[in-house]
Length: 597
Image (cartoon, rainbow, N blue to C red; front, side, top):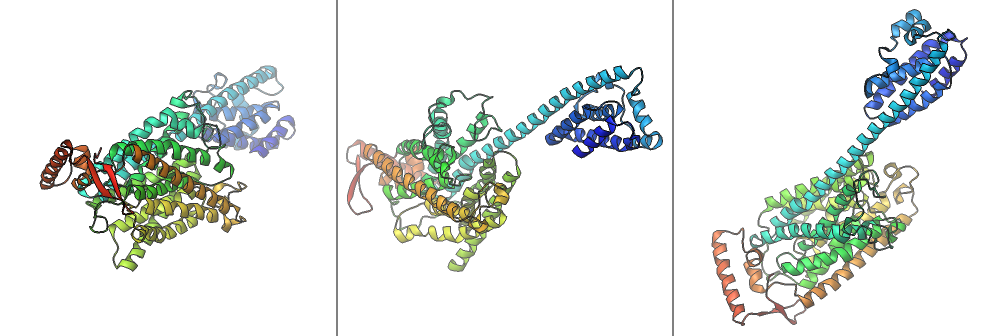
């Protein structure tokens, strides 16, 4: 079109070449259609028309006026009424061009070049140009607002999906896997953590994670969200308002610590659990998130790739879960009794919600409804489906039957594995991610049996190895066809010299070390001051009744549990049971407070 514009300009300044007028008219009509397309949201075409019109305006006579009139007519069709100077003006019909040529076009403009009304025509031309400029600006603003609204809607929807992952998906997934006397306590943990982290996030968490400060922490600039308004934009995603960005990142901060209780299910006191989670958010999640995602973070500067939280979410939560299961100890009767899931259907529903929510988890991390977001969502589904099958066939081959728990665990493994590379790899990479995730996480989940720790719901067995595997595979499969030509983000299989893999291993190692050490210190501190573990009788009764005073167990269990709980409380009040003697994992005796709360 720019070529046609230059041709028309030369035609307007050289009146001798009148045989080229029909081509000019056709070019003008094409520009008119472009402006019409811009009204539907094509901002690039608006800019093209603006450039063409500026070129045309440098000419003189009917050639320039014709182009401007056609563009204005098209603009008027999409942006409102026509300009006052063009009311009643109609586009030049193609048949009139064939019949009368230039004369028909001149008649539409109602003045002849070189006539006594030539000066008035030039004035009208300038007025038309000014009006067109104003309308172009107005249309561009509308297009920009529409695009901003689309970006905002995408992140809002993604935030909703990720929040659903915790208070619905994870709660149901974990709730169905525990014994019936601990269902409500498990669901309560997920719900309470969502509430606790939300308050911490607006108070200090968001500022510590996502403001510029040091290489580990942000500053105090956004404490209690000070300075955050509807007009502010965050530098990591200037396409949306900062409140929406804050909300989206909050949902990640919520689900990360909510994964950890899966490792110590059925046996940790509720109050100390909340204290531990609050401290863990501030001392583990915030620094790792800042270091990985903020531009001044040391892992970000090292060019460690973590698209949606392989290191920040899954490795930190997984290894913290491992440390928690070891420090708190095994469930009473673990190894001697069979701890079966009380309702696998609930867990299937929870896993399904997690899968759907993960589309917002990974897709929203692209920042806008872009082709890269589409690729991230596609990769998420490919990896989850492939890992489900690879786990199922692995279990089928070794245990001679495929289990429901196995196929949903495989889905979670695939979702975790693709998380660090969802926006860096293509679908072939996503397939390999899922293909390896199933068997790797299947065998990792058996480690608790081989080494004797009680990772109750496989918080470590799935999230930690899958997060590590995903980070490593990103160093092999990242490709510029997804990250953008010239981005320099590619893996070994796409031309990298191996340095990206080294960076990935560095980020994984830092995340493992930091989360494990800090979690150990926090648990030891909370245990020394408040005690971590419930009493044996409370654990046998079930945390639903002992902690929250209600249960989903059958009526006969409810009655027996109430009697046991009443006897236990009377024993404590008399002083005979105020302290419970229990054996720790190393065989030494450890005196722990018996209060379940």
